[in-house]
Length: 392
Image (tube, rainbow, N blue to C red; front, top):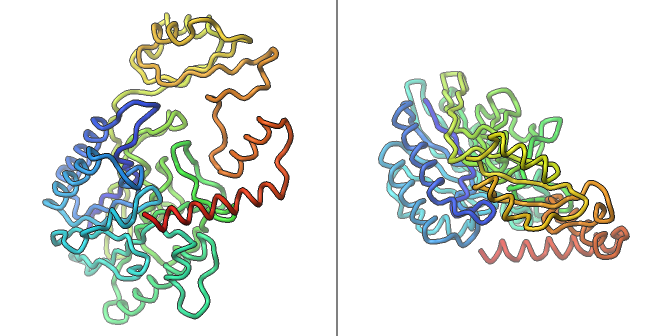
């Protein structure tokens, strides 16, 4: 069996104010063409179909088009991600045509989609993004909820998966397994992250150990926007189909073709997706940057420019736009002088909410955030986040 693994479409997302709808539509076309060209038998989409809980109408229409086109060809298995509204993405799932499986409810974890090939059945276990504050009550098998962490709730989910798989293998020993999940999974060292990924930590922790997926033949992951492997070809992130931040400038965007034989994964091939434009990050004094542009650098690229002159040059944006017609982001970060230690609104800050809060306190007061302030912020942030998740 050959499956196509993709994730993190983020339909409705822009890039520094630029509308990416046409680029996303082209990415969808490329994925549909890959299904036709490479004899794909099932498509799995591991979460973050949309960029936000209430996506724009154009994004909803593009998703409807993509789902119809894919479902006309092969079965499609979709899970919700942390950017999606599970309720909205899953609305009407019971009415979808045969072959479309959209998993958004934690209560359904452990119930597989069974497909087959010449070697026998393959059990696909879709696992939606599990918010610990909600899922810990749904996935408990006793009176006490599961511990409040991503590792605990995903571990409980995989316990259900393995229990179901064990029952099925008692009747058919060659049942192969595929888990489709949306999570931050680590294997010894932290994986590569991007600025465009929303932080999902609870209690300061967001990671899930690789060992959670022991015994699964293939794990199709979503959430991280850079394609990467965590356990050879067995556990893979496909990454997003487009670059959604300048931190992804060097990433090759792709989908994965995964072949399963009688024993499990036999081969994984990456198919690179064409990007609408190259991206570039340019840094230096205005004179150096303009000289580089005059030499023919990045005229057709989406560009982020950081100017390091001690004082902000006059008419900076106009001068940069003349040199870089597709300029998307402009920063002034003086490398010396009285402004060097100040925080510009454009300066990149860490993505973790607690780190952002600490940076803000330092910017406003010049001091460090206290332990009590950090605890208060963390509790308030997590409460607000849990309320938003419950509402959508």
